Image: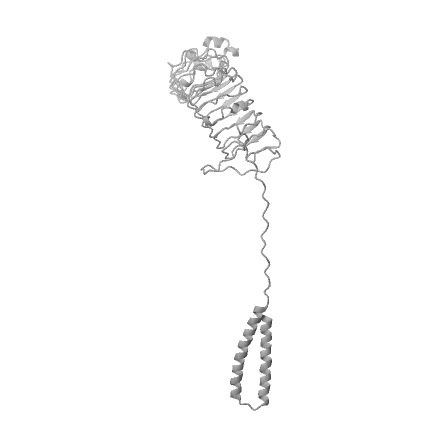
Length: 425
């Protein structure tokens, strides 16, 4: 079209030059010539525009390239849905919550079966560290793991699915989570039948877990909400050496003479910070340490410690014990090395065994000390055998602060306890 238009204007210019030359060669009037040329220019311009438009329409238009769509990606067949019998990986819930989100997965481990939310140190191939990661669920535990650390999370349940391969576990730390009794799989400890140490302090347990494995050596359940111990819970735990139940909600009616039956290896029993008003009906005979602090115990049955031939440390701080509630000579136990009776309502120092080394009587109602009454052996016998250390009482540390006592300490008291290294009044 542009070419036709340029050709038309060239033709118009040639005609105009020819007419002008004829006019200059003739004697035609000028004003008439101008009018004729003006009209001629109008007609030629319109004609040239029409010719250019017709020529442009006659020229064939360039064909547009056809639009081609990119080929669709091939459709692959969908994987079949897993059957109900198949297992799925435990995943973190995605619903809205006020809890802090789980920590981002760390770098990939050298172990292909290591959960991304945990850490598997190369130098400890049988340990799995999932602690302090804001987890809500227990990941799938690899079968090689023996030491599992899950403390300081927000875990609420212990499903058998997560532990189905963890048959070699020996140490489980679940302290400071949110596990409740009803969310512990009833068959969990059938799978974990080699566990030696189970730590579940600071959770939401309402009762001691059942079906615990006979291999268990330490069970720590402090700071829960335990108010129930099912019958026979400890009957098969002959290897258990430590049972920690302090800071729970145990009452007198929860404990009976068979509660701790079967704990033939138990060395430490911690029942402190509960709601007991009486001493437990029975305790395992081979106990070394018995902790009953922060209860409401007001008396001790006569001959209560008679059959506890290995009792070494006894703690009864923060109770309601009075002189009337303590039978004479109740603490005269030959194996006892440490006796804690602080924050009670005692008016006098109880009779002790000559082998006792540490005695705590802070914050009672003691107003006076009678050395001859307190001394576990006659003063004359001690004086005659002062060179024989076996004849001298072994008390080395005594606390009497918080009572109504004032120095000086009676001389007969100091003559009795000659090995005393520190006394606090």
